[in-house]
Length: 394
Ligand code: SF4
Ligand code: SF4
Ligand code: SF4
Image (tube, rainbow, N blue to C red; front, side):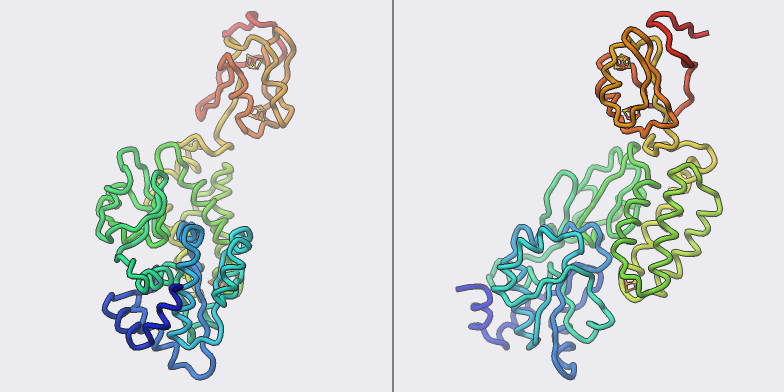
């Protein structure tokens, strides 16, 4: 018997009782007893629809692993929720970029009468219907199958997605020993703050530890870029705000940052939270605001000291060939995609820094370890081809 058949056999009243006894709550950013949500949707005039998906603002997408690992459970949960709400149709929303996963789910979704859509949920249109997190759908199906355990999902660099007790300290889930920052639940935390957090604060499931090797500014620019792509553009503050926030972070990583951009980030980010319709606009500024408010010294290093402390931002990094170590073997010339290494056999090679994209391929190719990446000053280097062994330091 399928999970959905079991739910139907159980009947509406028994199912409601079971959900309420288990205190099943909507997952993610809008926690609320599941049955309250369903009752509210059924009170609506006209047809009711089920819109299942991640929270719109969830660009980490760690919880999509539920659809990869137990698609039958999630789809059965959507079907059961539809049964309880008397839904005219059920939709499963997947991020635009997840076309492959969408195709993998197509036949199973059709068997459960679930329509797949690659988009974010239009919360204004769906506000009177049943918006359902896919993790709630999974919980619901597991409850019907008597496999449900209360808890929250967590995914880290070391461990795949798994349910843990909500009060599990973050320090037990990831090592904070080398942490510079912890990214979870839409924002950055300092290691001191992270020590006070628990698994329930990881609303997207992902917990990511950033060390001295990670640049907060570059990471923020990357995450804001994902939000910008996710934004549907209906709200001016979300559409324009994300363009501006991402642009400023990128300018700072490209050595074109200005101190005023920190205040501007705050001026744009704060109103975005209240002037937007869905969680994309409401939660996305948190990453930029937590970055500038908690890791201001990292921004100042980029803007005022012309330095990326992590040595990640290409604009602040130099790559050069150590004239004392280069043997003139020519190996690096062949791997350079920018064709910017000059040299010939037995001559000290030179990199044209203006053309170099800092891809690092030549570093890997040089067996002599003569190619150096540094965030510091460049030493004296040859300005013309010189035979190996003939370059004088002074
Ligand atoms: S906040 Fe507004 S513009 Fe941004 S994704 Fe949501 S509805 Fe679209
Ligand atoms: S691979 Fe290394 S040693 Fe060989 S020419 Fe290039 S820099 Fe010099
Ligand atoms: S870092 Fe990349 S682009 Fe620059 S010199 Fe090396 S191989 Fe060429």
